[in-house]
Image 1: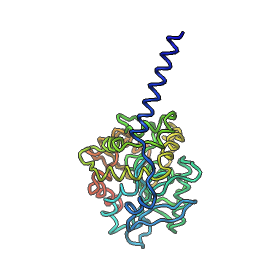
Image 2: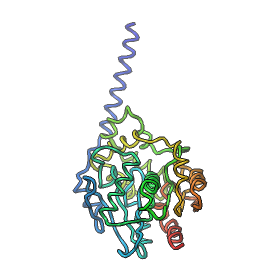
Image 3: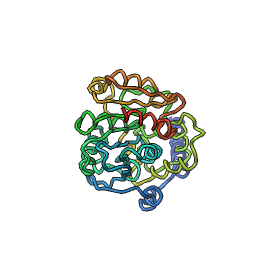
Image 4: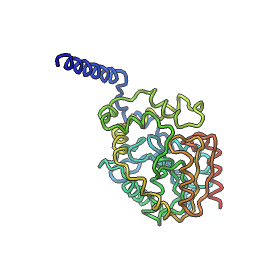
Length: 316
């Protein structure tokens, strides 16, 4: 018995030493919001109050556009992922992009609720604040699911949908970024809010690109620094713990009847191309544009090509 007790005590000691070493190696405090704003909220950024949050957004292009384009980023991203689309499309279209609650400079929902219905209600309130009646709603990954959920919950506010490697169906991932894997483990929740090695962010970003060679140090810096906004790491853990049952979504998605463009990266391992087929089958009259060499964030990896597909869709 004494031998077993010593063995267990030894294992516990090794575990404590490992956790301690991890904390020492990866301990990363939040970055001051003012410092982040100075770097990532340069003009034309602005902040507006919505539901108790100071929401970071950029609003560009002609103000007389009756149906602006509203762009929603994915998990752990920010409005900057749409820089290329804004540059390509704002000459003819009003382009609004935001940092979703829980990400970027907007920071967490005050009530900690990250379910889809709550995000849809937030977008409805945002459009009220902007005095915009109807939009073309585009979203990537998590943003894609928020987009189609909003189209179902508030159909009068969405004239068209653009789904970019959208979430919504049961995942059939072949590759998941390490940051996402760790955030989904409840036992690690206390650590996630305290540690964030930059190498983990770099690995995660490279994982979602079709061509990892395009991931620059500057790109990694952006993802890394904005994740260190106060509350964002805890919000990520909360969001992963509040997922709805995706098995119920097939019937719901089939209720969408507005014109829909589905853009996908053929090298997406997180939400593979077969999901594009599922969305296309569920949404009557939708069209798919597949970019075979791109990954999970095709709008960022090759903005000119993907924005060209959007311009064609908007002109139809």
